[in-house]
Length: 330
Ligand code: TXA
Ligand code: MG
Image (cartoon, rainbow, N blue to C red; front, side):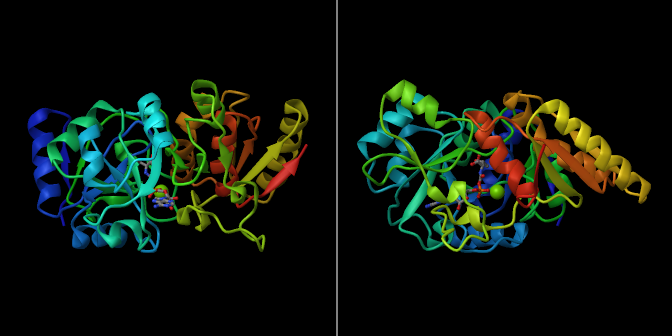
């Protein structure tokens, strides 16, 4: 199929919204990463998202809305703590897991009785979701296993010819996927770390927040049972081997230098990703950089680890996955 390229203007966005209502698939920018949207009420459309991505169909999708009024079209109840979080962090890079209502297709939630809901803050995303007039189920717009796309070129690299259209927006500002928070229990539990951190939530709401214990495990551990099904799959894998080096920066760079020299002597092409302590820049750039280095046919990518606190913890979650938890301690 031909993938239509829509510019960011009201008329084009209206056309894209019409395609969603007719059961088609549209990729669109958000502040986190590009999403691949389908009408959340249309099981056939939602199933075609799994096919376009080559994604296992037990992995539930996030439902995107433009207005608070649309919440009741998606969930059966809004817990008090969910309401408090929305008041502070919506629209924005935060997904809340709540009890789903009967209208939302089982295909969207992978058969779960809960659903993830998010109201993005990106203006193009908001205009698009508005024009759809239905809640939009959307995973990240990459082929399953690849890094999430943060530019429209990266979406086209994976999806050109596989989807009905794409809104050709700007590079995503946050650059890693939303924080996924389960609010169905007695306190919020972070299932996937993101730009909205536990520290930010504790500071603004003064409440208890915990992490899914699986976030501190490697997938080959026997008690690794993440509550977000998507966290168990192979993720963010570029063609290149990724190697994380952590510890003192000077020592780490020395080790990377030695390893590179050795690899290059064996005819391999190497690259270094080093954001120092700048987690904000790391979040924005990391996925795009992995894809860029793949296009340059790099064989080994060395990544200097971020401090694992606040946003650094969230970005390291992606870095570790892309490296298959391959870490050298300098
Ligand atoms: O920033 C984002 O969240 C992007 C943009 C497009 O909004 N979307 C995104 O979707 O990253 P996806 O499908 O790549 O990741 C959704 C994550 C998966 O790990 C999935 O298992 C989890 O959210 N999830 C979705 N619904 C869930 C539910 N009902 N219970 C537990 N986890 C859920
Ligand atoms: Mg994804």
